[in-house]
Length: 392
View 1 (cartoon, rainbow, N blue to C red):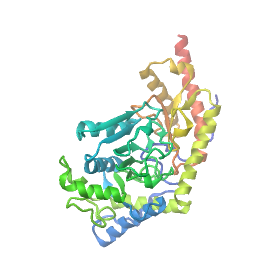
View 2: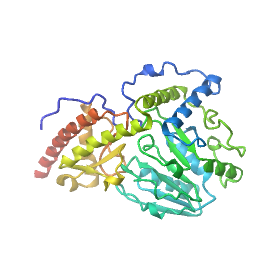
View 3: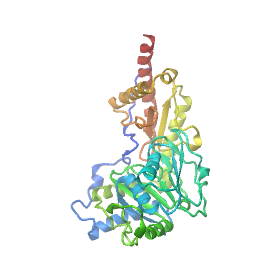
View 4: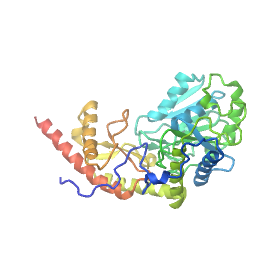
């Protein structure tokens, strides 16, 4: 097979940190308040601006709180679990690395007394209908490492007694979310918005705020200072929005503002979702014609439109052992990396060997189209290599 001539304009298909918005340059950061305190009048105003823009673009209810916390999405999820869980039984749903990690934290570290675990292998999703409305619920909206998303939120009761904690980091801004079904939403702007890493975002419904304030004086375990939003028994005005516990990078805040302004310019959340779905469509059309690759997600209903995970289905590949499969898949992705066509598209380390392509809004559909031709070329080269080895 001849090597393609048209290369991708942006080869960044990593699932986090993700590609910057189209046209981004370092000049976008020229007004950053570097060397300034985040507690200054100007610093607080900039933090408040980023919170307000996120809230507006997402269309959050007016009484939901949103702000920046430390430790990326992981820090935001941990903060929510450590400060909110424990007063009710908990249902935890995990079908990929991070979701299963939250189960480990709940069981082995927080040692919650009443936990129900619902797990599924990569490519599948647990029976979400098992969720008990009297229990707290912890789940991921989109499995970044498996390419599997929840099909909808119909399984969450509107009149639930417990709280729902949703790790939405690779789904929010790219998928429709019914906020009335979610009490805690966490994400990092390094995903769909293509922002810089290290910071997490936490969204709390009034019910979640009430739980946090009620539990603050009687949490059954030591809570790190960086998690104590309601340290004095009250989540104060601005505590999330601009009075952050940790010191945020105002350079990263400036970058997030740039991404949010771009999002506004393309139609807000609807525009972001449309771009992501367009990218997925390119891959869907290609996979439908392919004889060597398929989606890891077992059905279209649960197929992610951001972290798209692919499995290699060629007969020679399926006969390899797990270690050899990983080597073969990495040979394909290494060829593309060497050509400067696609960086960081290996499947997640704990996931089945394959390919993972970020299709969030900051990626151009034309680049995804160009990538498919290079994927076919790289696969052809590697398959020929293995065919020769099998003949020997």
